[in-house]
Image (cartoon, rainbow, N blue to C red; front, side, top):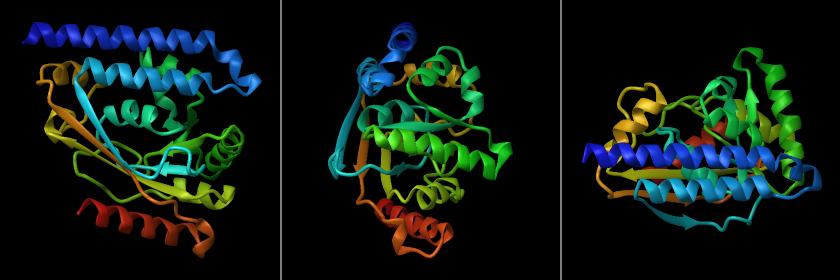
Length: 241
């Protein structure tokens, strides 16, 4: 079983490397307003879940119903792989991801917006400018408002995503992502993502990922970003329970 698990990991690594290089070769197409990088992310995500035997179940609104800011709980590296191929959008990620082998390279070429969290307000303004360029292409932003992965279903939200919603006047779109069995892809203790993926390779082919996209929430209905944040968190907790 361990040998087959390691083989799965090798296939995942090669798949990620292939699409990262392909994304780099197709980098120029974004200047023609082509969405090639989105389709590459879609194919990468689909290929990875097939390799690891993860079954997807999606419900909620349709993919193209709204352009805005998707927000989802963050518990596993698989969140990126699955949401990246389920939602028409690009991620906001911490700058450290650029240093990750292979994944950092691929993220750079598929319009990932990198944030230096130490820059505070100036970082939000920079993301907002990048977001406007992405929205023009008909794509959305995908953000994890907790700011980091957590074994718990949801921790408190940080305000960044909600401030961007106010600045750009784009709706928040909550997304729920649930794994069964959860322990198969959600580590109790955060560690190196390569080590975690190797460990997950040893599990059976029976992981189920449920993705539910909720209705968009217009920031114009709230007085400030904190009110919007509290409302979105309440809705997501209610949906999960």
